[in-house]
Length: 167
Image (cartoon, rainbow, N blue to C red):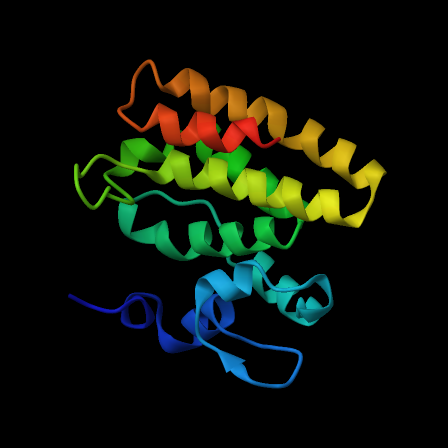
């Protein structure tokens, strides 16, 4: 099975999945990149990541833009929310099983999008009361749209609802 770096290409993988911590140590863990401190966000990198948020027409094209959007959302960048709006409105799930669940094989793309929306909100909460309110207003409609998709798509509502309890 090919690695994420092989699927994305090393340069794109490094852009999305690695960073340097406050002491200059290279971190090769996407979760660390997502949850880095505000002061560790590589601001010049944001523009390069935004360029990866492109429309998609088949399942193979979704990996890079979705991963870039997840990172940008975790960093509190509004364009990620706009990209998720596009993905939900265009029903990217219809392109194929983009992110199969490890046990049950159903697509978990919208679950991951919801988690990213909540990470965006969490980052906004850390910044200021005004950004907290604005961030919540930006994601409410998208979360509702994802919940409404539960009528058609199999996914773990319990996981989704547990995430929402913390808003």
